[in-house]
Image 1 (cartoon, rainbow, N blue to C red):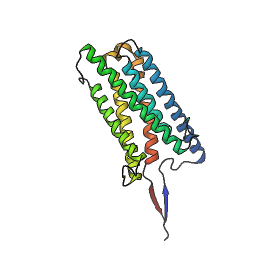
Image 2: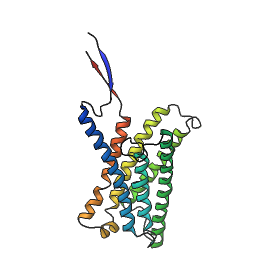
Image 3: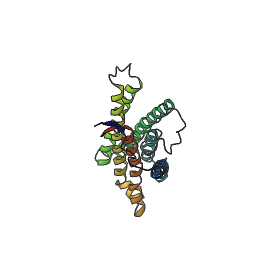
Image 4: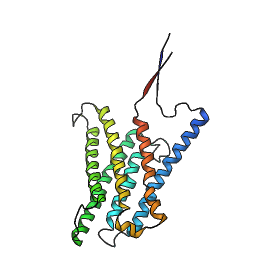
Length: 234
């Protein structure tokens, strides 16, 4: 009896050629739709916030730019389907990823600063809602994730023992940060300000919109870092 070990990735297993092309096009369309959704949601929230009318008005703008747009684009640029940066080299994508992540931190900290300043002016208490607590947790997780990324960027300087393993941890933690950010964005739509601004079917549409890019990002990361299995055939 002879046994052959066949290594495979479970993604697309058992698909014939016509089904594979359909699967590839569906993935491409979903990635493009995620780009459009992230940009559209950011623009809509920015318009609803009417930036400049108050200190608070800049908070939703900065946070949507940071977590709905920049964080999404910083991850999706590694996608091979439907990404506007598919022509870039791996090194170019990594550098662009770091640029996006740095902007995420800068914009998010700026948005948090506007919120703190707004509450100080109105003399309202801090951290009394689930949204604010989730926001603090998301911001802290973003800083930790960036620290992990710095170790990957300078492995010798940071004395990283196993860069491949750290890379896997970085991707996994990045997915956790993105999902946490998605929950924080959705929780913002339960705030008094948002419910007073958007009502009815439009409110439900806003609640569902952040979930689609999250599904695409989750699919991309799990497909890229899913452990390969082995099948032994006789």
